[in-house]
Amino acid sequence: MGEHYFARQPQAGSRPGTVDLVLPDLHLRLATDRGMFSPDRVDLGTRVLLETVPPPPPSGDLLDLGCGYGPIALTLASRSPQAMVWGVDVNERALTIAERNAQAAGLDNVRFSLADRIDPALRFAAIWSNPPIRIGKQALHALLQTWLARLAPGGRAHLVVQKNLGSDSLQRWLTDQGHPTDRIASRAGYRVLAVDPKDPT
Image 1 (cartoon, rainbow, N blue to C red):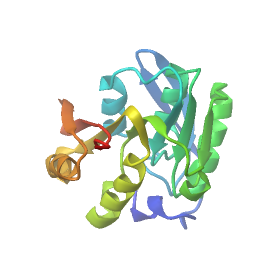
Image 2 (cartoon, rainbow, N blue to C red):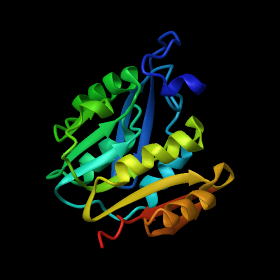
Image 3 (cartoon, rainbow, N blue to C red):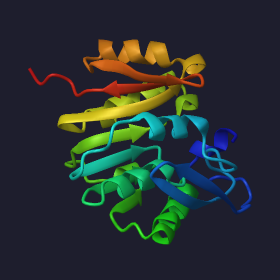
Image 4 (cartoon, rainbow, N blue to C red):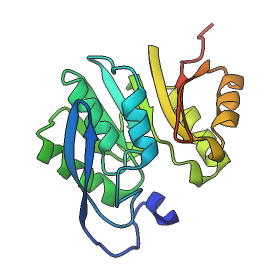
């Protein structure tokens, strides 16, 4: 994996590959490459998230924060064909491959982009994320504060975080920031957290 997966332009030489995303309702073969998150298999945390979250909203704008080569965004797009799904990442190589994976899957309701190219007025009915914990606590907190503030009223975020990488302390921090947060699943060392918007009052 390496720390280069959250570089904008990874320095690792290209080595294309494929992985299979197998869920009860979906089977996709996804292109991958070096220099991005979990290129050799769909990360266990991602699978725990996708196998445990409730169905996404059927319409509206949905966000995969830290999309990599696209397994979460493509699942959202498949499960909510009337929604518009946005995949955001800092890694340009991953975004290019995610676009290719969407085309191969025949999913035309998903767009992949650098964060600064997303319309700041967009509000999201759902955010699903396997967030980049290894960027460090300060950067992670800033990232989550930025995007959770863009949840639509009644929207909800679902995050998957390894217990030994601080899921419980992250849950407390989110609650302290005014985002009611519940653990909805725990499996294989991962926690799935459901995060609500701040109370506007």
